[in-house]
Amino acid sequence: MAPGSEQLFDTLGHFGRFQACVYFASVFQAMSCGIHYLASVFMAVTPNFVCGIPGNVSSVLFYNSSKASLEDIWTMWTSTENYIVAQLENGEIWELNQCSKSKREVSFDLAYEYKGNKSIFSCSDGFLYDDTKWKSTVVTQWDLVCEREWLAKLIQPTFMLGVLIGAVIFGDIADRMGRQRVMWFTSAGQFVFGITVAFTFDYYSFVIVRFLLAMVSSGYLVVAFVYVTEFVGIKARTWASMHVHAFFALGIMVVALVGFLVRTWWVYQIFLSIATLPFVLCCWMLPETPLWLLSEKRYEDAQKVINIMARWNKVSTSCKVSELCSVQQDDPGTDRTSGNGASTTKKHNILDLFCNWYIARRTITIWLVWFTGSLGYYVFSLSSVNLGGNEYLNLFLIGAVELPCYIIACIGMDKLGRRNTLIPFLILSALICVLIMFIPQDFNVLIILANMAGKFSIGVAFGLIYLYTAELYPTIVRSLAVGSGSMMCRVGSVVAPFCVYLRSVWIFLPLLLVGIMALLSGILTLMLPETLGKPLTNTLEEATEMGRKKENCSGKTPPADSGAALEKIEMFGQETVSTEK
Image (cartoon, rainbow, N blue to C red; front, side, top):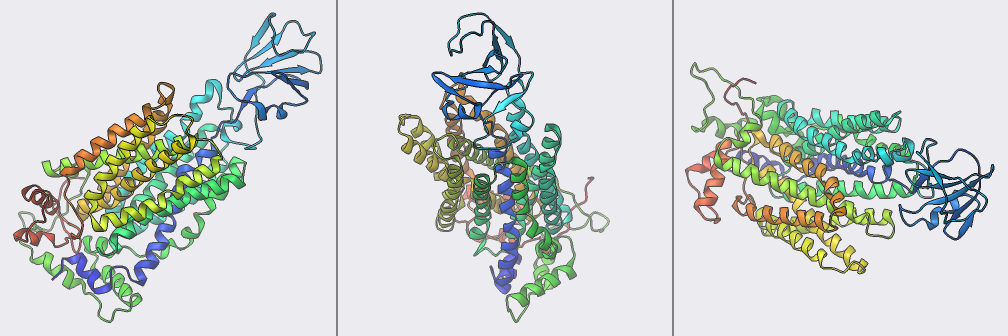
């Protein structure tokens, strides 16, 4: 008899009509996660600006060009070190820099160069912004420039900090309360907080609401991945899980399109948040996964979901819960009672990811891959915005380049295996980082292609690590493992913007750091077991045995032995040993 979970899918279908409906309804919302993650690319852009002046301008001078208004100057602006000479209607002549302004003591002649005395003032009259591209951004709304520039630079890192915290919190809650409830709460939260962001009244309320938005967005992405994984059989799991990320990439493309069409930040935010609404209205109809229901001993509810799956998939003979649980009940290796014979329950936490040497080593390696994938993903993305040309088209291509990379990843994972696909693409991304350092800076097209290739290779590794992590850990800590991995991923996301700032030290320093991390991750991944074609494990003992077999057989497929009994998925009717919360 097939192991419990695969027996269910062998009977009802690995990806039937029911799973298809549930899958596409769930991953549609992943698009809104991609939208909110990248929304600040345009919402928090800093346009060209200079100090404001007290009075009406009669004429403006920029180098040898004289204009009637400041708006005519921005097309010629090339550097932050430039300044503008403006003459007021009362005859005063001012030099306007970005973070200061100077009043000329002698104002008889309007000339760009001036050697006389000047009085320097701060920008007490506000700032004048270039609104040719964006009518309004959060930077122009709250003057996040000059001494307040650091506040603008914290917008994306604080969002990613919320993503980090949300991944762990909601991953753990989903293991305790169920996947469906968390998905409904986080999807509704995305809509509510997304709209609220547009109506925040100052910078601090803006950051706080976006922090909450980040938490629910991250929570949804983590739990939705586990949700669809537990509904899809092993024959379709690779393609189904990988294309969750394809919808995330579609969200990035939507950001580029909406950014091109809407140039006021709060209207732009509202349009992006509306994409969440369709799922919020229907997500309450999604069922809980039978695997989680059975792990919580809710056998009647699980049987109802199984019967619905059978009816939708047009299967004449439904799968019985008693059949799925029989193997677990007969398993002598599972201790379900305490000394007095009472059934007890264990509450799992993150320390279970370090319960022994094999699992601890696996966790450290997986966390490093998550961190490296995220760091590389966002370093390549943020750098590509500055590659020249149309920034909206650049962002659109950043999202579009991910779509073929997931197809390649799926083919590789099915033909070569998860580990054997992850290692080459990690090493390839490291080599591309080195290659870019040797490309002359005036070869713009070649630089763009190399950056896209780097994004492609790191995207393959970044995409498959979700599925690989879910398959490496048992049901009892699967959401926690994916959530903690996503936490490390978001640490990389928080670090990435600061890593890009290191370009001021050396232009290739961010790529060097990404290359070193990718090479190290690729080497350590050699020690992980392959999961291709293997059923999901349920207990930590099963997951540990998988690592031992890998070492004992030097990477060869292990023969069947008495450990096969441990591969019966305890997610069907799981009870565990009691501990303090």
